Length: 416
Image 1 (cartoon, helix red, strand yellow):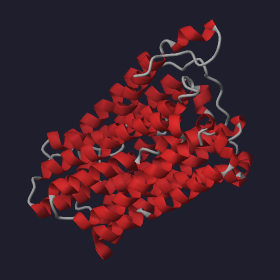
Image 2 (tube, one colour):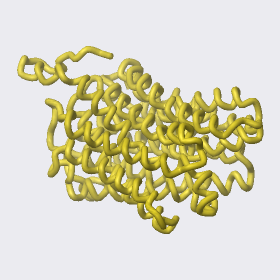
Image 3 (cartoon, one colour):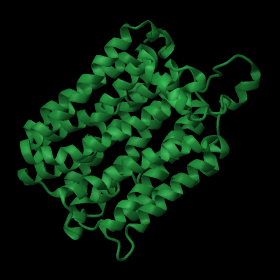
Image 4 (tube, one colour):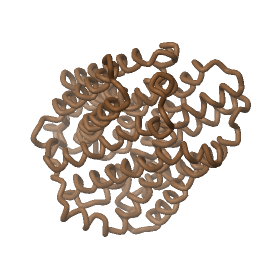
């Protein structure tokens, strides 16, 4: 791990920066634990489908409701300016506790899908106080190495979202309630870690409030538009892959005669591989440029989306290997789109720009998560996953255009 070096001149800021990487590592741990509830219900969809007789549409809504809640929570937090009114660590801790409570309540006696979906929506609303707040805290500790800092955070987030699949495997797959209980406990512990050990860094400043009148200006800026198109292409693929690749692995393993427990283990490894991908991409992007890393990630993940459906029911080792590559690449560029927007926009519009970017991205995931089950029914896994490759195609085009723009000199310290 890099040593803590002062990023500005003067002895006054050297002492706080000595705690930089210990704080960021603890923040990453808190993020990893707190994000466990996101896919907690999705990880146990097979068991829930049997007990609740879920249709494919209801299965999709177990994840889509979290996405919708996150969008509402992100907009609400920005409009109410919560990140400035509430100390970041307490907002993070309270949000993690809220996600833990909403997740635990799903296991209560008598809860049905009609009640579970609002609880999943509330989970997403609460997690809007975890992920964006974590990014804000990271930004208060980083400048020249912001790609690495945000990459570390996104990597931890990714492993946290993968966690329920491992819990499902350890729980024997069939019983879904312990998975949700453990995910809720993880989130509560994440909030406790944030409250006790995480502090904002020396670059802390009041984040600008979301303003609708600035939103139009952000959307009219050509370079920001290209960065956002790249992000939307990335999000078109990402959450649909995270939501449905585990069920693809389960179905493929069953055709090949493999125990379903191994499908949960593989799902954890495939999603969790993105944690390593995000960290390595962050290190690389600070050295060679954000657009270059984003293009490489999109090429790799899009190629995997096109290819993996053809392996359905085939050699489990080959299916798993390609899925691991996909999981590694599909989220590797995520932090770089966020960092790019923060570097391209005017500083006073940063809050507006990032709120718009993340909210539009998560809104898009509602459609792509929903569209996969009908496509599987119509054209099989091959065609359904190939449709996800449309996102990387759009993202690559946008990043190539941005790389050729004079504004690329503002990315990654002039590296583009």
